[in-house]
Image (cartoon, rainbow, N blue to C red; front, side, top):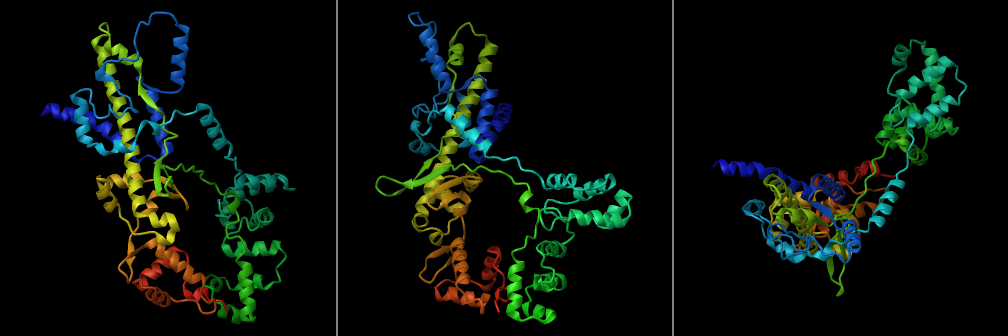
Length: 493
């Protein structure tokens, strides 16, 4: 009993590592493997090490080799590119690990040594540098405004007020404090605050330092010298109606014809509601596909793994040899054996990860061949449960395997989760994925008569005419997800 508990306590971290490797996206996986290379001395990366071995052989040419590193003890040998070794545990401990994680034996047929190429370190360094060089150091909105403040003819006290105002402007470009609050913070009279605020509001970008959307749009129109325009009057006097696109109400309020109001509203639509957008911080994310979808020699679609970023690892021959030497102490032998076990488990986990993702991708490809041929309109409903049953893994394994992973398809690089969607029944008994239905809805709206836009009921009828059963509330839901306004807000007069 105690032995079993002890075993489970040892296995838990390794099993967790296996799950983490499965769930990690490609670049995160590479970072995890690089970290293991630093922590586990018996692991080494092939490539540079092979070059070192060649140099050593050349320098000792003609000498009798003291140690045969090509024939390590059989109980500690493990080559991740040799499928004949996979599944041969070094002792009972490894057998227990294999049983607990239930490694799928079928994956070996889909993953061979040629799938893990030796990396060209020079090319990798160049690629990494290109990625780093592509990241520009962006200036924040606040820094840009402060530069303009320094170039202005501010007196010392005015500059301090300008700094206070700029410090209270958010990334969107809006002032988050009222004049009264700025008076309290600075101890200066409101007239001074207002004077400096008006100067800051004249800075670039237009509309900056506004206290609300109405003031933001008015500042932009003032900058363009459109104070006497219909656009300015609508923003100034009809902001509520503008937000609800109540064109007829605006027409009555400003005393202008409906078509003139319509044209003015189109012009207002070109104004920037977030003046600080250009300077808003962006999160750079590099997406590396796990799977490539391409045509085979016979024209069929095929899925291949991307192993470019995965280091080719092996158990160090030197440590294997040290294990075989009789002079090695028991403590050192135990330490090396423990590290070899950890290293072998890492190698098996990486292979298992690649195999699982590839098997899932192949099943997706089998079910979504029409999508590859024709695009989103032919996407078919597919659940993780269906794929899990076909691949022979648990549904949660599929969920982990596709999380944050991308596949390069003829229609762009897509997240693997994109292919998992429920669907609607059609008259002929086939099913359409939600994504396909949304695409059809979008096309219907694009082709509608703008003076008589389709209501949700009209859209339901249009789908029914196509043989697709869909509820009005589902149409409303999809329309909202596509950011399509209700029919009364889409009407053009």
